[in-house]
Length: 324
Length: 301
Image 1 (cartoon, rainbow over the protein chains, first blue to last red):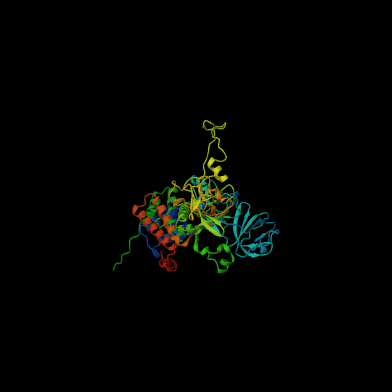
Image 2 (cartoon, one colour):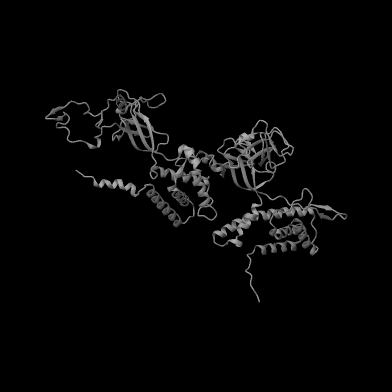
């Protein structure tokens, strides 16, 4: 989609000889436009829910909420959190989970792990959790169970694909080092959802006889880059799993330069990244990028055109009339 | 949580009868799922509030509606004391278990224990160097009770009549106390069994001296909180809907901006469901009534 968007933007800009935007500028504008639209999903979702409560929304093809949910769910990720100390975990970030989070939707806590340990070997395919001190078969590990492995500061939730006495094969071939902490959880293990509690309430909640957080009704607070789990006991690697909405990845229109220095689209490059938004948002992306581009090349008409187009998009659709 | 298989049910005695109950976990989970959300009357409420109201509902139900009595047997030693159970809220019945029979005990209408302060000969209260009042180990009334010398207004061993000699005239017994002093019997205190008085603040039941060395059975109600173990808290299924209604009402009635007619509707629903559940759990059915109705044939002499 990114090439199509860029071509459309350039076509509109070139139509009246307004100017040209370089690939690096386009990438910057594209990122801004995508973030703009991404945040609009949540505002739109809330508006749509309110409309439903006011009986102004329909079902079936008129179910706008569903479409927005689908658009948002594309960015939904479930990842275990890296433990910092006791009940304190690192919030998702590029270094711990590989992505930044926009919104935490739910925090799940495994009641108990089946087994824990530290790897002391690797396998040929780099897809093995190796621990020569364990007997995984006797411990009752089965295919489909989860293994959470912490490699450096990054924690991954993996699925067991094969079990031998000392090796668990998993659906990841990036286990190239030893000395990694791991914990195993049964697929059927009970998970309890921790509730977000504000920092102003957590002390009172902990002191309350009736509502103090327990294993069945855990709670969490956020502070700086950390997430604190209550009850504040110790937790195994991966015992806390977060489902959150991550930020979209920065779009990148990659290219190769041909003779005259003209950049030609090349999506085979390693840093290529397409837009992550649904196709129906292509027109909105174009108009938003045009706005930024118009500001950049100081063409008021481009900005005006883009704004008008955006406003028309946001206006409620008129019913189609049949004419003879 | 999944239903138990028949095997799982029978193999573990902790599961026996569990089908009558729904767990606190289920209650809160179901409520958050079914009664709270974007399109419900209750929205944007913290789960801990739901948990709080669910537990409060269960506590209230335990006090009267559930009819779930806990029973504890303990031996009463020379201290004539029975320490209240850790989950005690109120008593239902206290009995003496003797000779294979349960004898319900009567609560003493007077007190049988007291605190005391040390005093000098002029009745001035004595203090320690920190300004605290000096107290004896036992008050006078406690000492008499523990020594077995305290008299009782009940017709038990402590009664002034107990062991008294009288006169047998024409087959009838007469006592000095009766002649010109006392007419008839005070039926309120006409009980041979030991008596008790509960010292709620100190958490003990104090018995009369004739209870020493006897077995006491305490029937009491708790609040259903199971010592804070959330996994063990449950509620009879007959009251499940009531608990949801209770939570709904409590949240709506304390929420800003909820119209009064909605609060009233929630309150009425809560009340109706409680009445319904109470009727259901009282188990009024023909089989039970039959034995009671047979009593109508009894001849009253």
